[in-house]
Length: 148
Ligand SMILES: CC(C)(COP(=O)(O)OP(=O)(O)OC[C@H]1O[C@@H](n2cnc3c(N)ncnc32)[C@H](O)[C@@H]1OP(=O)(O)O)[C@@H](O)C(=O)NCCC(=O)NCCS
Image (spheres, rainbow, N blue to C red):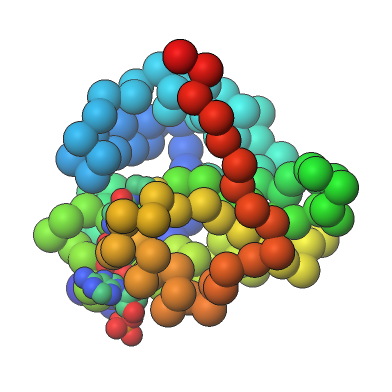
């Protein structure tokens, strides 16, 4: 499968494919969210905002998105990967790894030396994927409070 695979920048026409794949993957319809992300990352993209898709036989089978986040919480600029998904029937074939390697290279070119992400502690699959990509618990702790 991976022989016929290309990892490329997302194009405006990929939006519906991304929404469809995300709906399958996350079981939530977030079309407006992806439209807004596409406006910032694809239509008016810059080298420090990266949105990649994996395409096989003309079909979107995966995507990954990230950007350079500068000086948040007093930390030096770093790469931040905030979305990844591979189509359920295309998983465990190295597509996620290829997309992660490519976005890491792009973020490095954009000037950062660290990449970060955030994962739900119950999402064992994504945790095991990122561990396999070499990510480890970092020095920052997420804090939260319900405002209800
Ligand atoms: C996580 C995900 C992107 C991995 O994509 P993938 O193409 O299947 O991953 P790869 O084939 O490149 O696997 C890379 C490594 O991840 C780990 N991994 C992948 N699938 C795994 C599984 N089912 N169980 C345990 N580890 C797994 C392995 O360590 C693997 O390395 P290996 O091939 O040397 O064993 C994919 O499973 C997915 O889309 N999951 C849902 C993601 C999600 O919930 N997104 C919403 C939050 S952003």
